[in-house]
Image (cartoon, rainbow, N blue to C red; front, side, top):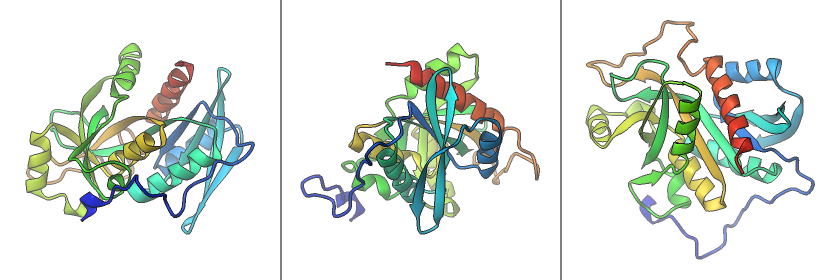
Length: 255
């Protein structure tokens, strides 16, 4: 059973190894949007500092220098297994212990406006990756949610705190499962948070996360909530990269 998969009594057959003379980064930003990647590279990147390699191709890691701090940035792929795998490689290729995840997420509460920042406090483990990094449980806590919330408060950015539902199968988000997760306090649904939080806990890293409230499940029929080509308030909203970059600077100043 997947719930029996956590094994910290025997060694992993393959483990990431920290590289010598790896570049230092105060914070590493991870997101999913190719449009945000293009925007960040064109407007902020000071060069490439690493390359993550897997069968699907090469993932460049860029450096952004802000106020004397070094912030890494890369675009990952959708889904917990690849997101966690690339983060494992990034942690080996970079001297960095703070990772900031942001991207679009489905919304489970019709009272939360499209484009609103949602901060996960815990993630429902409806995926497989986290069970290899943490003992079985329904939820995994996201301990740095208060830090992200404090940043949003200080900067006057509207946000909502709540649990998130991490799933492997977005085409199997059934009505019954939606009702269960909403009743438990989940306000968002996505595919990576539980897995990445479990990995960061296991490796002694820090994860900070926020999502952009996107399509709505809390309706008689699924509501995409944006028009074709519209970027504002979606996962491609470059304004949310600006939030992530400011949050990264804030995190870099902490201890």
